[in-house]
Length: 131
Image 1 (cartoon, rainbow, N blue to C red):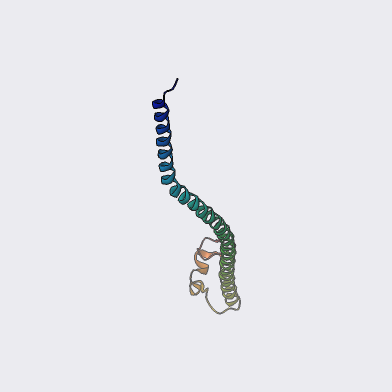
Image 2 (cartoon, rainbow, N blue to C red):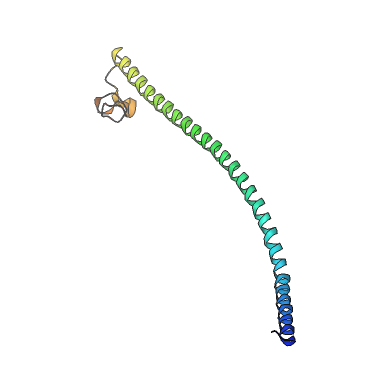
């Protein structure tokens, strides 16, 4: 049978454990509150980051379209420039041919520069072929 002393010691032990629990609870509550508020702030930042990422992806796709379009335009410009150079060479050859046919004198191949070197027509490299 428990004696009065045992009851008193059990009571003191309960009170002591309760005090320790209250002390731990008091220390942990501010930390828990901080963690909870930080969690909410992080969730908000995560949502903002997701929105900004989607916006950046859309913007990046638009810039990619602009870059692709510009690349195509530059290629067209290069093709046009090549066509104009070929046309100019052909006109020089035609002009020289007409000059020779009209009997302007001797063969004037050297007056045309590189467009007719090597005796061939074409790209001006003297090999008789296009580029």
